[in-house]
Image (cartoon, rainbow, N blue to C red; front, side, top):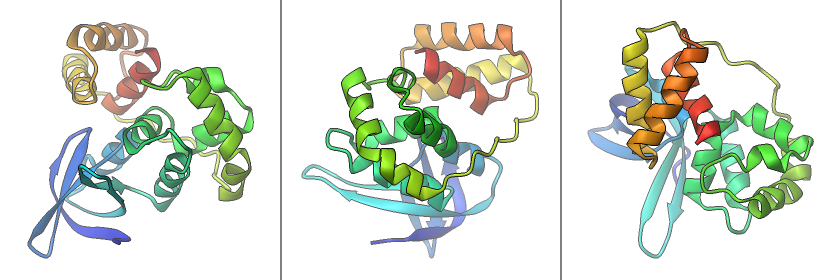
Length: 197
């Protein structure tokens, strides 16, 4: 229905963004990948996927077409909904996910919250040929600038809680990561925590 929305970033959290375009604020469910891309932007073009369910109409937003394409592949797998696909893309970049699928590493994929081994295996089987066709680059993301550790800790814990994790578990995982990597940015800490929780 909508290919993209371009406008002012009116509100941004690790779970959703509000993009104002033409006087209308569009509420978009986003991944941590997209959050990291939009975090310091005043305006943005966000690619969309419109999902209609019996009980809701949901607009998902993505910083890149590549991420949206991977999201659409994920939701094409029976048993994988929009929230699960968003959680997968919050945990792994599209290129990391392509690598997991190419190497058939279901054990690594099942580290995503709410994803069991059988569903991880099903994703790999169904997407092995399709993911190769995407031609995803094996690019490395640039690390975020070092921040105050206390600020990073509180932001990461808040983001994990918004994604549905408990405060105590989030706090423990984030503090452990920051002990190992004190210069890690918020997005990196959240991504690493998602792999542990």
